Every structure is written in C-alpha cells, then in structure tokens.
Length: 301
Image (cartoon, rainbow, N blue to C red):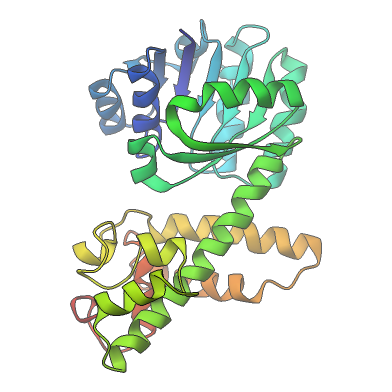
C-alpha cells in the first residue's frame, strides 16, 4: 500500500483519487471546494483540513489544479507541500500548466529535499472515472520509472516522455491537436448534413476512413450520434470552453516562444475566445460548431 496525498479534488482529481483507493491505497485529500470534498469522500478519500495535514505522512503527493500559479502556490506557500512533505517524497503534478511553471517545479523541489515529475493526463473526466487515462511523465529516469508504477490504477496507458518538462510538453502539443481536430469534426459534420447525408451514416463512414480522430469518435458535435458527446445534452460542459482556452493558449504561447507559426491552433483559440466573449465559457468546448452554421440555435445543430 502506498500513502498518497491528493491536492485538487475536482472533476478529474476525485475520480482519479478514488481509483487509487479502490486499488488498496490510502489517499488523504484536500480541496477548497465543499462540493469537491464531498465527492472525494464518496469515493473513499480521507478528506482533511489542510495541505500540511494531507502531505505529512504521504509517500507520493499528486497535484491536479487549474493553473500554473495554483501549482506554485500549493507547493511553496506557508503550510504548503514543500514545507510539510517528508524528505524524499515524490511529487507528481498532473495539472496542465505552462512549461515555465513545470521547469520551476523541477528546479525548486530538490532545494526542499523532495522529488518532482510532471505527469499530465489525457482522456477527460470519462477517462478519469474509468481509469483509462493516458499519462505523460517527465523527470529523472528513476523518478519517472517510479511514477509509472504509481499511476497504474488510474491509467490505460502511461508513457515515459523524457526528462524534466517532457510530460507537459507532450500534453500541450496533444491538446493543441485535439482542438484543431475538433474544428475538423465541426466543419465536416455540418457539411455532410448540408449535403443531405444522414449524420450517423456519415460518422460511420469517417470512422472507417481518413476523417477519423479522437474528437470525431468521442466529441462528435451532432446529437444522437456519439453517446459521450456534449451535443446530446445541449452542450453542457464535459470540457468547458474557458478551460479549453487555457490549454490552447499554452500551445500558442509555446509556439511563439519557439518561433513557430501555429495558424490552426490560433484559429481554435480565436473560436474558443468567441464562445467566452458571448457568455458561453461554461459550455462545452465543442460548441464551436455553432460558427459553422451561423443563425442556427444549439438545438438545430
């Protein structure tokens, strides 16, 4: 049995921590949200009142937080992870953050006698619940090898991505591709409908053809085709548009820093910003399909 501390028990964190509990591990968790704490209790997490209490006896600390600044704060604040974790503790950050924050974590952790890997995930809330997430882990060879064992109860696949920040680099590039392929699913689905094709039939054709992608398979933006799609539920969020903005912006910014021209990613970013500016940031990111069919309501897409 491994003793885990889990900081950040939201839509991803609670089910992931619950899968660790179900595999026989002990998990102490902390979150600021009453609702998140209650969700975590329901899946067997020992919810405690502070970060310090959560990490005091932990072998492994996992952070799953919205932004890079939250990660920095949780690690370095008074009463945070660095000042309360035992020497040698492995810290795994599964948040989606900027490269600079991840590099800072790798550099700061040894100064406090602890170890760090960046360990972001792909697969969304459904993957978190089903323990089928893909983990991308970056850090020293020994720490990555240990982390690969720790994530087994939560993952379908786990990858040693490389050295420090390699995991988050993989996640940023992967999510950029996700939002670009979502635009393809949006435009293809609406063009097929306009040309008189039955939506389900066209989806089956693309599944067997070169138009297939994870977005097309999982988030197809037409109701009644893919059960997991937000289109079936008036685009209530499984992945909020305002959170998607964060992810694609990380990619666009990283591309600029590298001197790259990420034009498709910039267009995805622009469409997501439009949703937020229209007051739809809390809707699912796949609602960008509305820009293919101007004038139609969500129910008509």
